[in-house]
Image 1 (cartoon, rainbow, N blue to C red):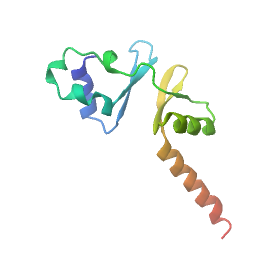
Image 2: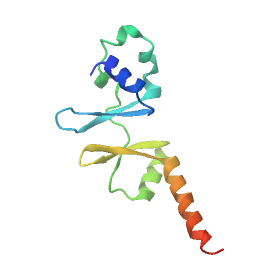
Image 3: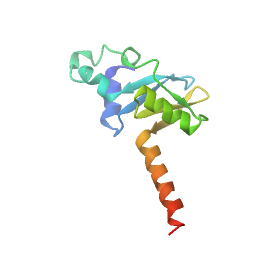
Image 4: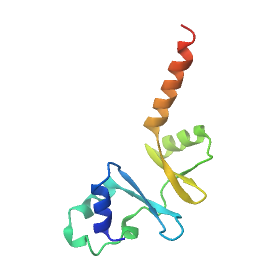
Length: 117
């Protein structure tokens, strides 16, 4: 995929992270983070010469669908990541964010503590 096609998808999206997958197998190949490609976005000469696989992070930090939540949070802390791609059977399953995890944890604490009062 050319950068031009990626930018069209970005324009239609509200996301900051974009998984790159093999078109034939669906295998996860890497990630594109919006903040990391800004220099390419403003250089129109690159739109039809740069391929997505040239600018993606081919080895991003990931977690697996069946990873323990404490391991996921530990990895986020150690690697200083706020969001990580979730991989299941070699394919992109979604993103997990620290903010969402902590919001869910806070909600659960509120539910549990409300039973005592």
